[in-house]
Amino acid sequence: MDRLSSFLLRHLAHVERRAVRRLAVRNGLLTMSTSIVDGHVVGRFRPAFDPSHLTGDAERDRQWVRDHLAAFLIEARQDDHGRPVLVTSVPAWPVHLARRSANEKNTDQARVAHAVRVVAEAGYKPSVKPMATLLLLAAAMEQSGVSLRDLGAVLRQPAPVFSVAVLADGFERALPQLIENTGIVPYGPYTGVAADFAFNDDLWRWVDSETRRVVLQVPAGQTNRPSRAALRGQLLRALADGTPVLAVSETHNGVPDQVDLTCDVRLTGAGIDRLLIADLLEAVYGSEAVMRHDSSIVRIDAGALTLDDLAIAIRPGRPILSSLDALAGLAALNREDKEDGNADKNAGASRRLITQSPSERRGQTSQDGGNRGDRTSSTSTSSKGKRKDSSRHKPTGAVVIQPEPDDDSSASTAHPGLRVESLTGYGAAKDWALGLKADLADYLGGELPWSDMSTKLLLSGPPGTGKTTFARALCNTLQVPLVVTSVSTWLQGEYLHDVLDRMANTFAEARTQAPCILFIDEIDGIGQRASASRPYADYWNACVNKVLELLDGAVKTDGVIVVGATNRPDQIDEAIRRSGRLETHIEIPRPDIPTLASILAHHLGSDLDAVTASDAQVGGQP
Image (cartoon, rainbow, N blue to C red; front, top):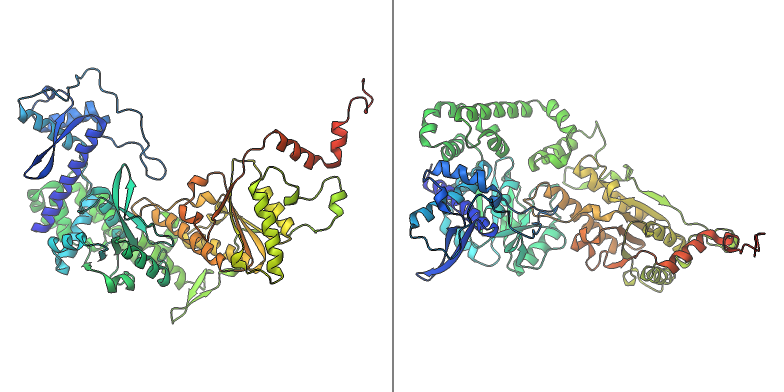
């Protein structure tokens, strides 16, 4: 193992143990005081438990801490968006252990240092995937002639741009995870923001009870990559704010041209080879074990392995021979899958794209494009690279409802027609609809441009408050078709490109019905953009980004009124509610007593007189 790889692995273990000590302080297992040494602020840790429980044997003491104090080494529970759930108190202290006072003096400093070291070791969980990712990064730095000093100097600058291309399956997701989750990169910690259509203006963000430096992560995969114009705008905005930019690719031509031409650091690596496997095994098992089995390492088909293969085959505590056998078997399986194209296609058809890696998604997309004669593709690419839309013939799942005739005959019937004018309890939503009705008349008469109208609305409220009823009434009041869809309908697509096609085709169908209303139910189901290191973040970020793109496009399309409905407005991405999109947000409350009476009167119609008639009128006793 070379000096750079060895240093980076030691540094990774150091920052991981430091994170364990800080977690132990938050949970009350350790105490910390600060002092200034040679102008540097230094933290001094002390155990909150009596260190006399320890024997001095590192292995036995580490196991003792895990057996008795494991609750103090666990991170706080997280919600669906990766944020820690606040707890009211620290874990319960074991009754059979004496808690040590923070002010208690202990002259045996060696025992105190041993106790702190044992706590850090007990909570430290070496993970093979970050180690392998770091080794790949070190190899790319060596190959590209970039030193740690150079890398640190660029990181200190405002708005640095990095391009990293390493030929290892899974590297696109693994590197952002390494940067965010380990704190190994200086001048952090960092949180990644995907390159999308509404970039956050904050240079620093409050995440997981700490401030993190925002990094703009540019997707390299063709599925999630924004258009050139959109990416240029995001880069301009990020660099103007001083935000770092990172583009990671698993191919040498996958980095977008805007990043590749303007980057400050360009790293290129060859990927997984036998030398990397040997270094990884040395970090886990030691150099002597690797030397004893070097002949077995040489026989491994390293080029067929992925980062996930390394993580599931090599595990601390597992015999090295078992790891070697697993690596050889996984490499053989991967090689067979690549050689057997038909088997790979059939196996891929049974898996949803959400569980595939970026390289698998690109492979699936290329197969779809290469077999257009066997099945209909949503888009096709000509020899000149122009995309021809053939997706308009694919079903979208949307339902088109025509308005009821606008005449006065319904006013005399037992049940009057559903109109916004006859609704009660809608407050600001009713005012918005009536104002839109007047504006639409002026627009159709050529007196008002579409851009001056308020045509985007987000309706929220508890279930049963009539959000869908409002959309149906709006259709009758405006006398325009109502195109009804929902996020769950979009997500019925089998693969990601099917989902995105359904979304785009729904908006296209609405444009063909213009002027019309596009009603999107359960819009909170699209979720919020997450850090690129989160599981399946690229899938959900692509869905949110597509909605943002379509809403922007709808602003420039005359005749499309977009109404979104949700029970949980707090679960909607902030960018969806910004200016130009669903910027008008109206909450429909639960009806009060007078409103309930009006609703009953509306539905009963002429039967109301019979219901409210006195007993004398129907033959009862006065």
